[in-house]
View 1 (tube, helix red, strand yellow):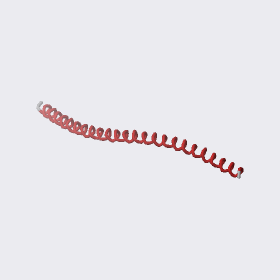
View 2 (cartoon, one colour; view 1 turned 90 degrees about the horizontal axis):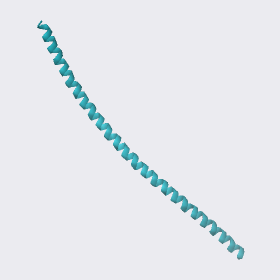
View 3 (tube, rainbow, N blue to C red; view 1 turned 120 degrees about the vertical axis):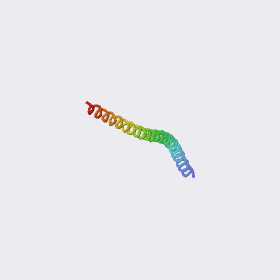
Length: 89
């Protein structure tokens, strides 16, 4: 009976060590997962900022196109005025 009790105690000791190792590994994995979630949140925020920057860039491009169109009209008017003035000589 004593030998059997020693085997049971040895098995229980191994199980206790394995349980401790599993608990430690679970804690490390939990910390890693928490870091990954934090990084994912930061990446999501950064992606949102990129999309906002893209929207601003598109708006700026539209404004630039409108300004270019206005400048073209001014240049055309100036060219017509120059042509008219030169034809008066």
